[in-house]
Amino acid sequence: MQDTLLSNVFDNTYLAHAAGLTYRYSYDKFNFSFGVNAQYAELYKQQIFPSIYRGGRSFQSFLPNAQLQYRFDKNRNIRMNYRTNNTPPSVDQLQDVLNNSNSLQLSTGNSDLNQNFQNNFSIRYQGVNTLKSTSLFILLGGTYTDNYIGNSTIIANQDTVVFNDIALAKGSQITRPVNLDGYFNLRFFFNYSFALKKLKSNLNVNAGCNYNNVPALINNETNYSNTTAPSLGLVLSSNVSEQIDFTISSNSSYNDVTNTIQPDLNSSYLQQNSKVKLNFNPKGGFVFTAEYSNQYYAGLSDAFNQNISLLNAAIGYKFLKDKRADIRLFVFDILGQNNSIQRNITETYIEDTQTNILQRYFMLTFTYNIKKYFQKTPDKPKDY
Image (tube, rainbow, N blue to C red; front, side, top):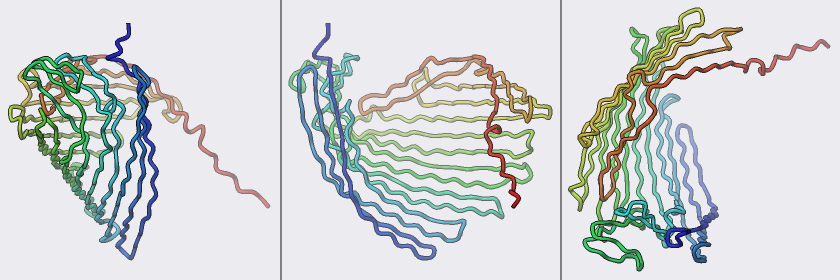
């Protein structure tokens, strides 16, 4: 029998109309543009079951944008961007339907949500030195959001009734989306690449940092969850010959999370991924590839701090005219250690999850390249 309290048929339509003007100016090495869009949006909501409900809202927004670019020369430039946009609430966020799949962590939607308003900015520098085989890329960006759609969580200290008709048992909680102000994030990324001529290789060094400030309500008090995540990476890629090449890479990220009214949920953890990849194509059509990777986790709960090694390999042979046919035998997870670990952090709890995934297996593939058959034959010159 269908439970009308937990069943729902809901239709949501979002229609936006926009018109705008943009002014552009360009001179020599400099170009600039500024514009604004006037947007009118309509949000239609219609519930068909268990009861009939129709409603709608309209939103008016002015969405400015700007861009500035300066070229120092043909290989170096700096660019600044600013843009704004709206994102409407999703169907799941709008539906007033109780989700009780977890009796201790209930959730429901909110039909009164507004669309958000995002301000996005970025500044980036890019430069290439072809004589020295070096390149530099720097990015700084961020987002500030008004009417951010966050979560309001009520944790029951005693049996109570919330939102008029939802019974909440002592010790359980219910989460509902609400509009909040104060969300912002900042991001920085740096990449420098240069050639190692003696090794016939290129080395990429990158570093970055993300900072997020996420608001939420906990028993009607505002909590700000602040996440700082610096990272560092190296990539060494070879160009030894057509027969052999390799790539060695490593990337480390450290996450530090603090909460303004929930200090018990503060946490920090380290994740490091390293990889070595080898391709060997000796003469005669034989192909050999191998990839070793290591995933290291520290700072999670004791059962999830792991050091996982993965080894994949393949051997193959190319044959027929122009080596169009390729047959290969792949072996995945030779060491039998493949695993899936993820940390989920919310304003009310920290969750470490481990998922059972496919481990060692074999795969045989056959590939035949037919693209040459479809290449256009050059027309012969005509005699007149």
